[in-house]
Picture 1 (cartoon, rainbow, N blue to C red):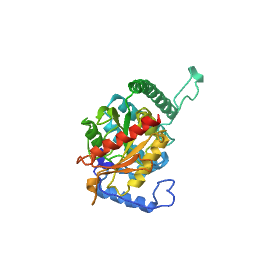
Picture 2 (cartoon, one colour; picture 1 turned 120 degrees about the vertical axis):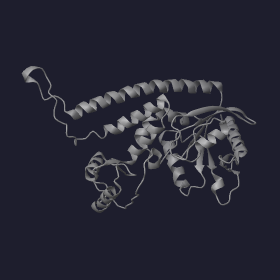
Picture 3 (cartoon, helix red, strand yellow; picture 1 turned 90 degrees about the horizontal axis):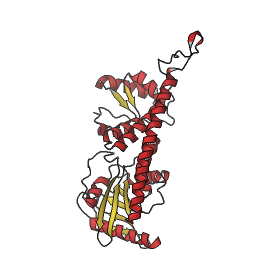
Picture 4 (cartoon, rainbow, N blue to C red; picture 1 turned 90 degrees about the vertical axis):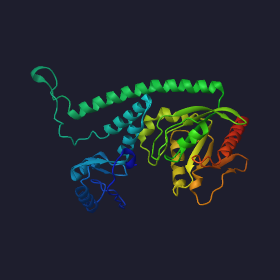
Length: 337
């Protein structure tokens, strides 16, 4: 992920601990090793692939004498670089402010009290910490109100789509599984594609003619990731609503990824967290061209419904089978409803 924000990675250090150190997260020996690497490479930042407490982050910055970013802050930085729409930028700003609010701790050097009251009997007034918290709360509340208005507009658009009677299919999946490539293949939309995480932050919607069925709406959504910060889930609530309101989910999976089963669980856990776990799901095993042996095919459940399709969106392999599986699932859905 660090490469996605243009960071030049000079060293990758791992360690095992049963319990993180309360002060530095890592032990003193590992901290000394990191200090040596910082000095040798003249590094300007250290990134931890784990969430750090505010105290740990502050202690590490003092110890290393450079910037320290944890997993949450790194993901927030990536989202900030990827956001393009007005709503997306507001969502990222809200997530950043909510994360910053947890970092306002009593470690600052400017916590002297501001003079308050009138005349000679003025009280001690507010601490700088209290002032900063109040300013942050005001900004956060303002952003939430603006996002509520945008969410109301999005809700009205969803209602209009439902009145049109067009089925909505949402693409979900772990980041970098090939969702945008598949979206382009299905819709000829020309969405941005890159071999990096979180290239899609704002939902993209396109009308698509499904052979043998009719017109449908396809939505490309934000990619999921392990330990997705709660600040982002909350901030992107309106965007994730598109997933929750869909008639069918295409769960895009990198078939060549040795950790694909772990990532499938991650995506399903996030879907459950946002209340989309009951939406019918069709797994799309993408990138089969990277397997030593592959055959585009459809796997069926005992009731005759398609539950998996093996394709390669980049090489246009198995796409007609995917259309067939989508049509079959939508037809079964229409019969049930």
